Amino acid sequence: MNCERHDWKRAIREIHGSDACRIDGATLRLVCVLLARELDLVDYEVLDHGARVAHIAVQLGRATRRLDDAQLHGLHLAGLYHDLGKLKLPKATVNKPGPLDIDEWKVIRRHPEIGQAMVGQIPALVDAHSVAEAVRHHHEAWDGRGYPAGLVGHGIPLRARILAVADTWDALRTRRAYKEPHASEHAIEVMQNEAGRRLDPDLVDLLLSAI
Ligand SMILES: [Fe+2]
Ligand SMILES: [Fe+2]
Image 1 (tube, protein in one colour):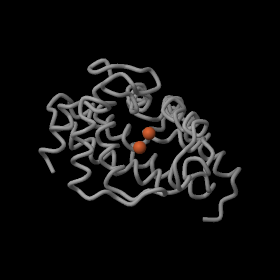
Image 2 (cartoon, helix red, strand yellow):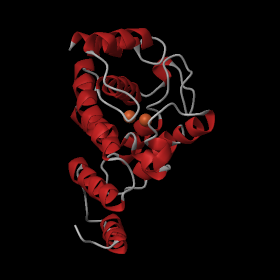
Image 3 (cartoon, rainbow, N blue to C red):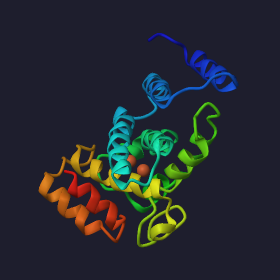
Image 4 (tube, rainbow, N blue to C red):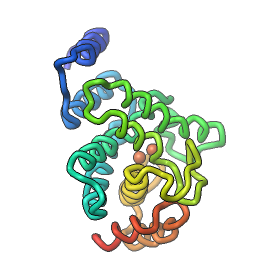
């Protein structure tokens, strides 16, 4: 790909400026991935992680029998973009191969709200408001100790609770810059531990009964 940076920016402005344009989630993700790689904004893993979380979240969402097809579609988009806010954070912090200090955590904890703003500003995105809401709240905790709003239990939007479970499972089971993947048995143990703390216990049960 030999595009100059300003060409990419102009292309995206034209896409966003077109009322007639409607982009499905997969196409938009492709644009995001190409942009991120071209501009060297972030480790590719952040975006690949979104695809895996989206897949797990939709399976889990379907298993709840509480979401219709349109809501599942929104959940898929929210899964793809849940960590999009990290694109705007310092790459060295996002990809740091070791524990984060307090200041670095403060930076990282901004990504749900940044992501919400980014997703909410995409007029071509179907169901942008509820997708953005799920992105905003994907780090809320069942016991109220999450962020950014400190919502509790069923006060957290269902799709955000689903994302949290899918996100945690994927983080446990895949390699990160700072850790190797956990074995399945250990990952299950961690999920059971987090049920009722960070994660919705019913959703954890649903996930674990399906694997
Ligand atoms: Fe996140
Ligand atoms: Fe994530």
